[in-house]
Length: 575
Image (tube, rainbow, N blue to C red; front, side, top):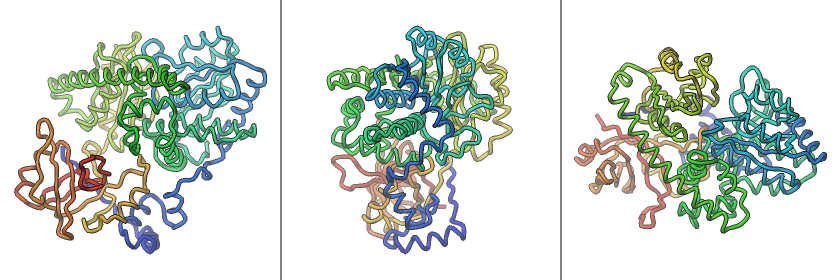
């Protein structure tokens, strides 16, 4: 599907700011435009952006209920109550549990952690876990990356004398659980400056508050920012404000002295001795940690992340790597099955603006990935359901700009449970409700999605020529890292480029184009790669001019003749 290219010029007010910034970055013209697009309008703001500082963390007590949460934790430790640290089985939940457990364990020994099983207990707080906590004499549960909708479960726990501190970042309902404290920057009325923390990020702020109230140095806590960085990258939260500071320093930790468990994953990924980027976290480290909860038990991921022995960490890392290999095989098979179903029912693709697909035999741990694959392939909001514990359980993923949480929420009377955010929602419902859910979900999507949202969009940050891609420009561009939502890797457009005469098709099925490109502004030849765009090759091979959209990537191949290559996102032949 050919993407639509969008470019939003700076407003007159933004142009004034850009002109001032351009005086500082006169040798690298596009940089000032990129900064203004990110809301950075002064030299002072640019300095802060290029050099994220731990000193710019917000006071944790600005978050509602932080004082109550810290007071209850201090009370529990003072009375030597048993504490349970509880979290979701995905990357965000397991890193959060590992961080809070490891930090508190330095000062308190009567503590344990618990991760529910995806298949027997499901998402969030399970009654089984509460019964277990009661049997173990637990009096306080710190719950991370879930719990904001667990009204009945927390009421049951309270009847057994167990208190809860909720550390969550998912969208809350109007009615909240009866917890001692709820730390969630998305709570209505919250004025916390960074509302889009990850679940692990909320846990980090809680530990900041605890340390501050007890006069404890936060240096050890800041040494765990590699865990927070992994959670932020995997959960795809906005890379702005505190999230960017955490990720910046967390990546530095990953590259210098990472958590022992993460070090074993880094070694398995073949990243030892290499500069680890946010892309490495998203595509290599995060999926392996996630595979534990998808295929077996998320507890194994926490066991790895709190490991203190090198041999033990390496053994656990190998097991988790095998889960990831198994996950890949399942992912491939189920995606192929889903595509076959959709192709056999052409009306689902031609007449509908959404996809809802169900197979009771699909693996529950994979359906979120399959939903992402379908959304990428067909560019429609997608829900993938399977059967688990007597309920149709599923995951949904959205396209750019469409709030799928609102779409699922419009069907809440048909659901047993749901939760998530604008681009991804988990849900469960009775099997007999699937047809009506499918009808109403499609009805909502049809009424609310914009035509442009059903087609891939490429947002262009700046038009540049090849002559502007200088060493100084590349050096400054690297300072925009780490990238993510809200600070996306800049997409550039260069017009009127041509094949240098050496471009060729590559890949097992010759589906990719390996480029050597020139434009008419300089004699520079730039290497590039365009994945799955072989249909353009005959035109390009004829040495005809075309426009490209691309990101600029560090070329990590040992045989590379250039330090960078262009990752081609879109090709438009010149008319």
